[in-house]
Image 1 (cartoon, rainbow, N blue to C red):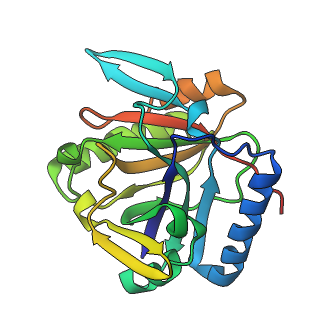
Image 2: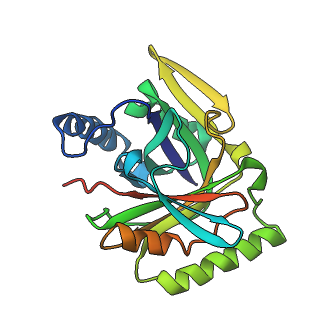
Length: 237
C-alpha cells in the first residue's frame, strides 16, 4: 500500500534557504535515510519555503490567487515522501527514522490512488490540496465519483504538464509520528495544529510562478478548500 508521509516543521522562524550550507547538511541527513529505506521509497520531494507559496482559493465563483501560505501558522509542510509498505506498522518503522520526526511531526496517510513520478526537475511544482476535515469526501461514494470525474477532466487538459500525484484516505485514517529523546510518540488522526488537512496533491511542470498559478487555478477544489502551490527543490544525484 502507498502512504503519504507529510513532513511538518516549525514555520514561525527563519526557513532554510535551499542554496545554504544548512540545507546541504539537511539533505545529507535525508540521503542517509533514503539509503536506509531503499525500495520502500516510491517518491517524494523537498519544497521551497512556505513564504514563497502561492494560495489558490475560490470565493463566490471567483478564483483568487495570493502570495504566501493561506494562513499564518506556526507549522508548515517542508516536504513529503511516498512509501510503498505492506502495512501501517512497516511505514511507522520507517517514519520514525525520518529527521523530521525528531524535531517536528510526520503525518502518515494511506493513499486511495497514486500516480508515480520520476526524480523532480528544476521546473517542478507541488500543489497541496487542502480541505476542511468535515468536507473531505469518502471514497466509493457518489460524491467521490463526481470529484474523480472533475480531476480526470483536469488531467486531460493538463496531462502534458502533470508529473504525478495522488488522493488520500479520509483524515481519520491518519497517524502522526514524533520521536522525542528517542521515544516514539504515536497519535491517531491528522496533525491537530492544522485547521485543514491535505486531501491530495499534484506534481507538475511549469516554467515560472505565473504559469504554475495558472495550472493550479484549474485544479478542482474541495468545499471550503484551497490549493497551496510550492516550487520543488531540485536535489542533484
